[in-house]
View 1 (cartoon, rainbow, N blue to C red):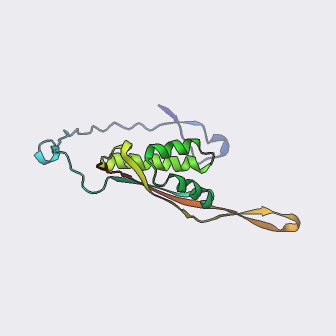
View 2: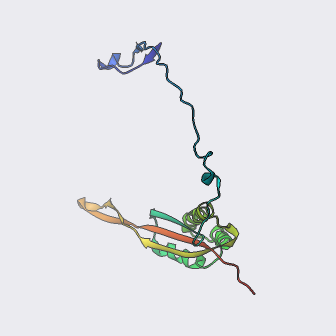
View 3: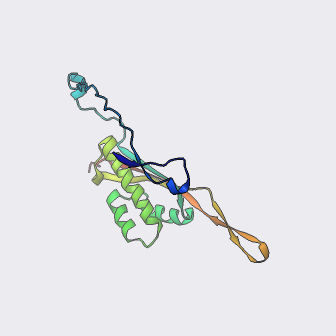
Length: 167
């Protein structure tokens, strides 16, 4: 077997093929896999989920202005999950793409963790906080430099399953 290995020699000989050392293969013991969960009757029962059926998703250190993100979040707060997704798709703002990804993640968390139905979900909380500024320098005339501040934001979205109202 010939392999290419680096040697600690001169540059010209560094990539010459070197015979790989011959090592006898070691036989490994194969242990049978035993599933103890199937034997226990409690493990086969369905776990009941108590408490509110909600899902939360967060996104941190995203580039963009928190002011522009809040403008979009104010429009979707209190709307149903499906309506909010439609709004995100047709709004002309760049922040909508990031917000819709977080909204989809929050709905998936509610469905997977709490068993909520996506058709009944409502955006209960949606807010954005200011993150740290990324500071960059722009060279100017005569050896000076100006500071460029690139803002970031943190995003938090919570969706809850809306209880059906009796008429």
